[in-house]
Length: 268
Image (cartoon, rainbow, N blue to C red):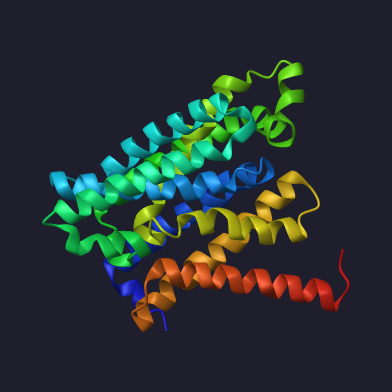
């Protein structure tokens, strides 16, 4: 029954997956409340450009994905301020630029044959060196969120009122965008660049249906995310499926189950 634990790559995939399963919805709760969920989509496509750069240049794609994602996150924040009345334009601009770069480099690269694994996630992608990177980044992300929790909390509900209350909105926005970009970059090997945004949002959507408070919503979001990630990785092993797609389908299934239960039992 647990023979999958006999394989080292599965142990690495489960460890990496659980780390991703914690930080993705943790960041996603703040993004969702700020109605910035589409940032995850934009950065995930930019991360693909980072992967393409790594494949083209011949070095570990996760490194280039991290660097490119951070640069893109800072660019989004800058454009979001410049187009304050049309903030979604910043996402469209960065997303388009990321896809353009990715398309050209994938076409030029001789190593682009493995790009599909980065698009949809693959449990075989996670190496021993990757575990250290993912663990380090997870610790950094959680530490930053704990350190600036109340600042992020105020910004999530009302940025204008947070500024009036003395919250340093500009630096906190920059820090949070960097945290979001790191979350996207470290998740690409498990979930894939095209699907990481879904892991950031769908468990949060499920958690919002049950959570009675902000912290409660975070707990439920992480809970459903971990169920999805672990089930998805195990099923993808046994049935030779793309781990990212399997994880996301389970997330959607759990969301539908919670919606159905609430409707049948008239739970508010």
